[in-house]
Image (cartoon, rainbow, N blue to C red; front, side, top):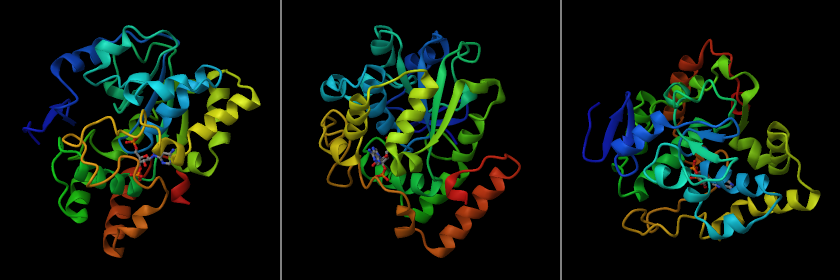
Length: 287
Ligand code: A3P
């Protein structure tokens, strides 16, 4: 793998050039993590935008003003992207920050801090399908080719942020202890209220029943689709071509069944199972 017009390599990870400059990656490395920072970490297409919708009102008593007036990438910014230096330094604490970084590439100040992490995982088959459609609409990414071709890239880690298996395994770092909460996209779909309560408990916070209702109702797929601060309609078509796909596309679990042939499924399952062997990590979709 080498740098190309669209991608750069960063410690072996493929990143889109449009979002990551030398400056932003230096900023990432030198970022001073504060003990009350809250990181939401995802492999791309696992529910990042969703968590960007949930966290701000959860942290401020159910107030929806920020989700209605500030684009998701500014209200819960990416740690490693271009706008981070402009946004994060001015942020009041506690700062809610998203990241796609594997654990070992977090800033050096991260592991020794007390900052908390919410890690959202999603069935990699649905991650793949979501990413495939995203590559069709994102003009700053290579055309994905056929689903079979894109699957080969995905399984060999020649995709944004590397292999899915490496990412989920990196975040099982025992040094994190109880600083990390593991949730899944599928659990959020099944019972968002329950997951919001779990996040509140993890962060040591409370919300009134009314405020909790507001957070949950605001975070439904239907409501996010119509929220211009969350549905990426602010990004012009020359960057994200909405004629090809929607960013908030289907919002379901199991869409892979509409895309995978039995052969593709067998191959995908075999590679992922082999790489997860011995890790003791169990996900709802493995049952
Ligand atoms: P699909 O392409 O399968 O629809 P990310 O934000 O990490 O890029 O992930 C995007 C995926 O999360 C998309 O999946 C998107 O529709 C889904 N998503 C975002 N908000 C959601 C919500 N409230 N409910 C269900 N899915 C949601």
